[in-house]
Amino acid sequence: MPVFARSPLAFERGEGCWLITAEGDRYLDFAAGIAVNSLGHGHPHLVEALKTQAEKLWHVSNLYSIPEGERLAKRLADNSFADVVFFANSGAEALEASIKLARKHFHHKGEGERYRLITFEGAFHGRTLATIAAGGQQKYLEGFGPKVEGFDQVPFGDLAAVEAAIGPETAGVLVEPLQGEGGVRVLPPSTLRALREICDREGLLLVVDEVQCGVGRTGKLFAYEHAGILPDVMAIAKGIGGGFPMGACLATREAADGMTAGVHGSTFGGNPLAMAVGNAVLDVVLAPGFLEHVQQMGLLFRQRLAEVIDAHPSSVAEVRGEGLLLGLRCVAPNGDVVVALRGEGLLTVGAGENVVRLLPPLIATEVEIGEAVARIDRGLSALEGRMIGARGAAE
Image (cartoon, rainbow, N blue to C red):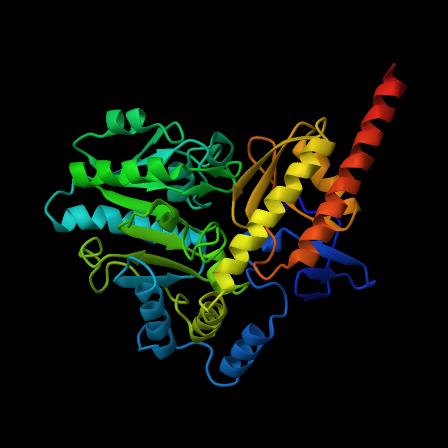
């Protein structure tokens, strides 16, 4: 179906931070499959984990115990706020599970009227009917019939609006600590702490969407850690699979008290292949020094991008983000910037508010960061030259 606006590129193989076409052209991949390829391409530990599991067992369904899944769930719980984990296949499924969990929690308590979640403008939570309603963006809602009920949107980070939106039907607050699709907008840690306080005071669940910003991307294992708070529920995906489709809903035992046998499920979720890869990803991300490396590379990249802005004020205006989830707010149309950078062999991805996202694999080194900055500089110079030429021709 023609639902994707694809660029005219196809790749045959990948090596670390690089993608290679059948013709041998090499592209520096700072899109990482939209923050998915957390450990780059062809990572030997992930490849070995998948090959080893593929030779043993692919699928059994959740009718039976899956030891590797139990191990991965325990590791996620041990390294987060959570007590329990539900495995799915994508971020949207992880969010669906989170939304259902929040509603079921209050139904289980005898408060079934409390089913609404407060969400934020600019959010992106997925493409299912419930998650597009949670995101609230008209371009994703249009044409799909009545909007799923149960979501009250407020301006991003507006605490007064959150307070005003709370009513007898409110179950919780759903928020991205760092909006990716929405324009690489960081929710200030003080605001996330205030949301935690509001939820505690009002008896609400705090649900965080870390599908894009979780699993090391911001320099912490999970982005909520920057604020020093603990959520009640969290959705993750993308980076936890390192390229293999996987999502998960993490929760405290209390928040998940309504999730009893038969109320939710997944045929493929938690399959042995995905669990083997997820454990391999954690082997690397939880290794001593890995997250410190992400922090160091994020700081270096941000500093170098500031130099780019100084050199190209007519094209880019601001660096946003945290760790290795960074964005350039553009003066020129961000689509033109993405194309210009691709012309220099650098892959990036657009976002809201005229932003270009820079999402390198978390294994990127100073060498790849330096190469990316050089290509950004050349790409912006080429774009500015074309813009000057176009203005001259118009005159």
